[in-house]
Structure formats: structure tokens, C-alpha cells
Image (tube, rainbow, N blue to C red):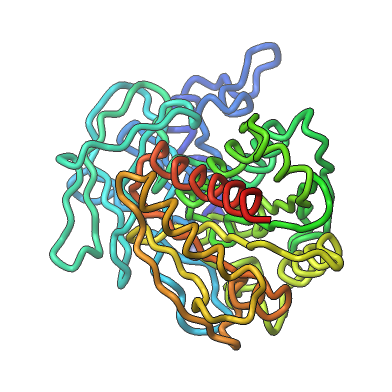
Length: 404
Ligand SMILES: [Zn+2]
């Protein structure tokens, strides 16, 4: 009896016509499977002239079937969780290869979870457009989403957000900081052995700390982080120059590479929510990052630590205005900057939970700094997300250089 994998390869070969033509093994004739033109050998299902696969970094955790009506049903599964309470962030990303242009109905089956991410599509995995809402229909419980897709001959990618695997934000940060005197540091290794990479630069009296992507699908938060970095580095006025000269700038663009590349909804490879682990430090990613931040900060005053995320609205989680931090006065200045410079200013929520295990709480406890969780709406346009990040950089520069 053939294994399930062998069965799929046989089906894939049959679907691509190779088994019948007998070309696959002939010397001198290119093997389309080997050249990856049809990703059928990695397919999770094959038939109706299409193959579906999830064999790329940040692909979702999927299986699929061909339904009796000829449509394709793809399960959207989450990573194993060490403790109960996964946040409902049902991430999906898969690739459909078709042997001809055709229409295809694809149903995302979330079992008990609800559809959250508007599908994006791409023919090259790099340039993405949102699938028109009239092409998406949900059942009453929102546990199944039906997509009507126009497939080209070749490949169509479908994902919950434009794909951004772990190397993407590291490479973006490296490019953004080029020639600015920053150091790239390998501050540790993830559970699965991926490098944990941070960047540090600027002067040395005080410090600021920025991070994003603790939670894998939260790429609109990453856009705000990028807007922050661009503005912080890009401003050429004297206040900005003074700010950069006086502050050690500590950036962690990819603290959960295993979760990001594994297509996780929220957790690292150890099944833990890293942004609930900044107290127990059970995971190598949080242990390494917190130790590296402390080492880079040394005895400096930390003006703020911002952690960029995404959720169902744009909202700022900040400590109370009477929290014990020498720079807590920055928060009203940040709020005023947002209110005056953004078309849709964020809501604010002020609280502190000593045992919450968030980076925000740790910043206040360990660094005496206003730790801020900056949450961007899942569907916020990239330009608006970047504008919010830029406004946060402006607020830091303007408040601390005009005041000190
Ligand atoms: Zn998050």
C-alpha cells in the first residue's frame, strides 16, 4: 500500500500529465516538478486541474479536500498551545497552482474559530491586493468563509495579510539603517534554532526600545514599526539630530521567527504566547530579548519601550499616568501628537498588571520606562499605519529635545 504522501505524488503526477507522458525521469528533459513550476509534490490536495500547497515560510497550517461540487475546502488550523486560551487570530496562507485560467470556489473551514483576516491575493508572493469583499461570503457563525477566485494559469497566492516571513522585517530594518552607524547583533537563538537579530545605534545618554511581530500575523503593527524607524532615521532637523545623538536606539524586528515562519496564529514553537512570558521567561526568545535589552540599556534612562501589534481596532495600551517612571510625562505628549497629526487618532487604555507577562508591564517594572503596546487595526491601510509610527517618532523627538 502506498503512503499518503506517495499517493499524493501519484495524484499530482496524474494531474500534471507527467505520469502518462513518461517524461518525468528522462535525461536531458526538464522535470517540471524538480523545477518547482508545479508544486504538486508538496500539495495538500490535487484535482480539478489545480494543486494546493502550503510549503513556504509563513504558510498557514492547512489540509484540504475537493468537495463533491468541485470546490476546494481548506482547513485553517492553529499551532499546538501549551496552555489554554489561544487568541483567535486564524492565520491562513496557501498557494494554488492551476493548469489553466479558471474560476474556483475555495472555502476556509475554521471549525470553532471566526474568520478575521480579509484575504489578500498575489500572483508572485510579493505584490498583494485585497480580494474584493463581494468575492467573500461567510456563514452565520463566521466559521466558514467562501472565496470566489479567478485563477490564472500558474500560481495564485492567498493569505490573511501580505506575506512577511521572518527574514522580511530583518532585511527591511537592515536596509533602512544602512549607513546610519547601527550594529546588527545576534542576541540569541529561537527554540527551533533561528537567529534572533536586533539592531542598536545612536548615541548614549538615554535609550529607547522598539519591537514588533511577537505575534506572527500582526503585520499592520509591523508597518507602524517601519513608519517609526523611517521617521526616526529620516528626519534631518536639529531636534532629530540631537535626539539620535543622545539616545541609544534598540530595535528588535523579529522576536518570534519560529512562529512567523511556522504560520502560527499567536505562539512560538514552544506553544507559548511570548507577550505573556515577560515575567516567567520560560522561552528562549523572551529570555534572550530581555537580557539583550537590559545589556544594551545598561544604566541609561529608558524614555519609552514600544511594542507594535495588531488587533480589531487601533488602540494604545499604556501604564497609568501616575506610574513610577521618570518619563511618564511623555504619554500625554504622545497622545497629543496622535490627536493632532492623525486623521483617525487611536483610543487609549491606561492600566498596569504586574503579573501580566507583557513587554509593556516588564518595561515599567524592569526599566522604569513607560512600556506601550501599540495596536493597529488589522485592516488599516499601510500608509495610515506608517503615519502612526511616524507620529510616535516625532513625539519622542519633539518632547525630549524641546524639554531636556
Ligand atoms: Zn499582538
